[in-house]
Image (cartoon, rainbow, N blue to C red; front, side):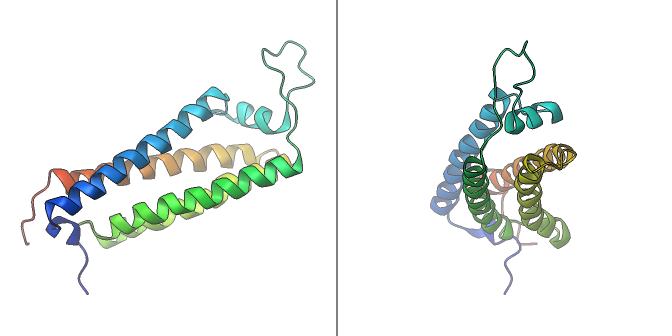
Length: 166
């Protein structure tokens, strides 16, 4: 079955439906990034402080305490499930785009590894493997870059690019 570029052949109603979904999904995703910025977890020390606390820093502007195991499991569980669903849906749309197969498969599969590295890394950092904060930061950035790239490609092919039947 040929599906590379199938997105370009969809009727405009389906294209608008998918484009609207992707725009709303992006608002949700980027709102989550605003929350990450608010919690000051955009750098390795902020990531560590957010989960391990800063009780020893008497001059901290905001006092943070080490998260409990139940809270950590809830954070990791909900984020892995929701992020997997986000990338599953976006990946389904990306399968239908017209792209070189290797690049397309990278955009579709890699986010699942980033999800595991980001949220698994948070758990391992919380459990005492402090250097995982760097893995968390790098994989989180990578996940966001891939999300943004996929969204831009999908929206371009849904709303701008014409089907040239090549």
